[in-house]
Length: 130
Length: 336
Image (cartoon, rainbow over all chains, first blue to last red; front, side, top):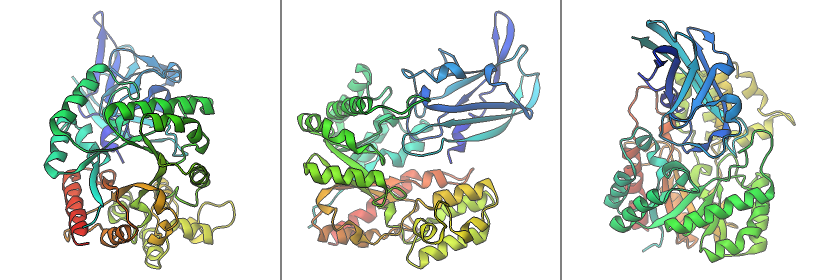
């Protein structure tokens, strides 16, 4: 269900700031059929080459401009993760991912008002970092 | 000639939209070509609902002006789980619903579909808004959460008490599955769900029942699944399959007899249109005859849900299924 939306193919890349690689990011679409306020995001998890990324190193941006930690995200009621729009998941990691092939797993889930358990899924992709 | 009318829910075209191959202009043009009414899900295709930008509203207005579609219904949600640490208070839910009523009116809709489990106690407090903005509040009766659900029964009680033309029901035809959707079973077969569990579901449907009834009748109190179902569940995929299999009901049409005076809308749920032009699980020809006998004059909206059961790597066939279902509805209505 909605697996194709979880981790956008070809979207994983390192991120540089002031000439230094500060981490890596990828894009994701909501695993649902409508947009929701970001506070209804239940879980965002990343694993790189089988190693789980610590929760506090993950930031989420519904628009690619404003980034929130997962703790902050719980109170973000005025930004929506819109259906069909690509949100950004950023992992803070000095030096980013080393050049070459990696296996990235992204897990996302959301709360809905009428389904008793969070709705979501995960997707693993081989990604190549230039 | 029957008074039953056809429309298409944007639910049917969700993947076309998500992939960017159809946005609002293409969708309006597509429906216009089919000569069918439009059911919208503003949370899906209008950013920042229920407070869209003036710019987006202008785009909407220009499309409505250009194609003049019949705007049948807007499907809305009250996000009672907006906060992680508590649910909405009644006042918060009321305010959210009032915003949705105003948006529906602004967009040109005269009906909103309230999702299953919408709290019944917020209906009476917003009735004056529904009247003022000329928007019917129609609770969805959905398989898995249908007439036996306590939330639904609370709503039905309020609806009967208010007895207003502004409060009614949207019936989802997923409550009339005579067979387990084949695309659903195949999807989980692909995930490794064992054949015995799938065959058990088929057998229960063939006996005229469904898994919700079967689990209730054959499970111990407090246990979710019947003993033989539970014994066949060993993997997470099998758990998910068993939970979701409950969401297809096999009710007789006459379950609607007492509710037809309140039926303001129908979701023509489809999972798979076959090569013969029928829906694999739901007998729409019989349904349309039943609705006509009951004097139903409203719309039936194609709601294609096979998109989520399309196997990875296989092409989505949203437009094909939507068109085939519209052709089936047209034929059934013309033959009345």
